[in-house]
Length: 234
Image (cartoon, rainbow, N blue to C red; front, side, top):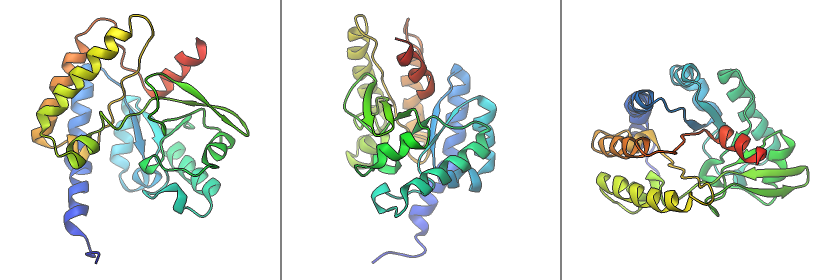
């Protein structure tokens, strides 16, 4: 039976919005990194200070649905997608070009809806280390690499690893892609959630990883939009 109100889980996620995300801002500010933030449209409405902080830093706003629910449970997907766009555009001042669905969920028609709504890329596929194309009824949609393996939900919540494992796995992931990148450029996505990686015992290892990556020659820290622009110019 659901516990309503579910205070423990609500408060756990709220920690990310009250504390964890500000640790993210501090870390990425120190390294001069601009991130792509996959946010629900509702986040911009309920947490305007966070949306403002993202906008001030030039972060990319990537719609993550309007609310946190699987796309296959949405009755009118085009309307829901447009609602997310409107909320994001109002908060960011720019029309978004990239999409990441809640839980990377979709139906067979979702890519068509996304392209029709004007999106240029999606992060809903974990099938490659390089961008690729997805054909839709309205033209090509670019897929920007995403990952389960370097995702803190997978590693910390599902696999139950300690925080230091994020650093170890991140270094191993990077070193292989860095070697392969001598011949073909590779993308290393690092999906983070403020209520997980923003915890004190985890942020220290996340900082170690980013400072390690930041010190390697030839490494670029790009938003999804920057990766898209680079890919389309090749």
